Length: 368
Image (cartoon, rainbow, N blue to C red; front, side, top):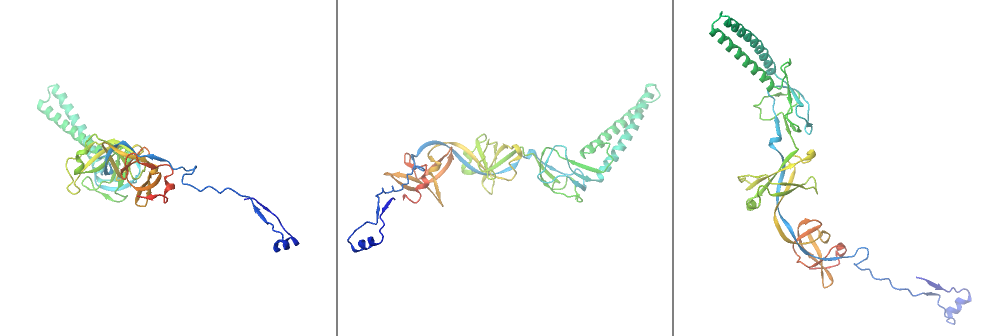
C-alpha cells in the first residue's frame, strides 16, 4: 500500500486544530483486494477422474512358511561313537561338498585299521597257498581237492579284505591312515543350520536321536501353505501363484503349485500346499513367514487411482464429486494392481473421485 503524507509544523498545527484549515495528514492510494484462496490452486490442482471397471485376477491368500527341501537337507551323524576332538563350523557357515565339519576320536577307527591289516596279511598268505597247490596240481603232485580247498580259503580271505576296506570307507578313513580320529565330511554344498556338539563331548553313533550337525542346500526351498476345506476345489497342482515374504516387502516370487497333500490335518482342518522356489543367494531362510497368492480366475472390479484413496485412522475414504462439490465417502479396498486400487464397496462405476490433490480436501468436504 502506497501513501502520500503532508506534515504540518508550528502554527500550521494550530490552524488545523482550530478547524480554520482542514488538511488530510496522510492520504492512501486505493489498492485492489487480494483474491481469496481456493482449494484448486495452480500448484496442487484437485483433479477428479471417474471410477472405472477393469478385469482383475481373483486371488486366494494362504498363510505359509519357508521350509527346506527334505531331499536337500542333511543330518550328519558320526559313523562311530567317540569323543569330539574339534568342530570346524558354526551355524550360518556355507560349506562345500567333502569339507571337514568335525573330527571324532573313536576306538572303532583303530579296530577297523587293525581288521584291515589282518585281512591283508591273510589274503596274501591264502593266495600264496592257492598258487602253490595249483602248481602241484599241474604237475600231478597234489589232489584236485586240496587245490579247491586252498582256492576257497583265498577267496574267503579276499572277501574279508573287501569288508575291512569297506568299513574304513564308511568311516571316511583312508586305508593308509594310522590314526584313530574320524573326520566328518559334508555330504553336500549347503548352509549349516545347527551344531549340537562341542569339543570334548562324547557322541554316540547312528542310534543317537540328534544329529551332530544339520546342513541344508538352500538353492531351492519350499513354501508350504495351508488351504481350508471350503477352498480346496480352487487350488490345484500346476496353478500359478505369487509369493511374498514379510522379511522383504515389495518383492515377489512367482511359481506353480507342485502338490497338494492328500489328507486334512485333523487339528487345523487344512491341506498342505507346496511350492518349490529357486533361491539364488540363499535369500529365503527356513521358517520365514510367507503368503501364497493363488490365481483362481478373473473378475470385473471397480478401480480408482491409488492416490485417490486416503487412510484416516481405521477409515479408508475417497472424495466424490457430487453437484460440483466434493463429498467424503468411506470405501473398502481390495487388490492393488499397476498403481490402481480395487474398491469392493462404497463406489459405483462412473462416479468421479478426487485423484491428484485429494489430500487438500481433507477436512473441507461434506461427509456422506
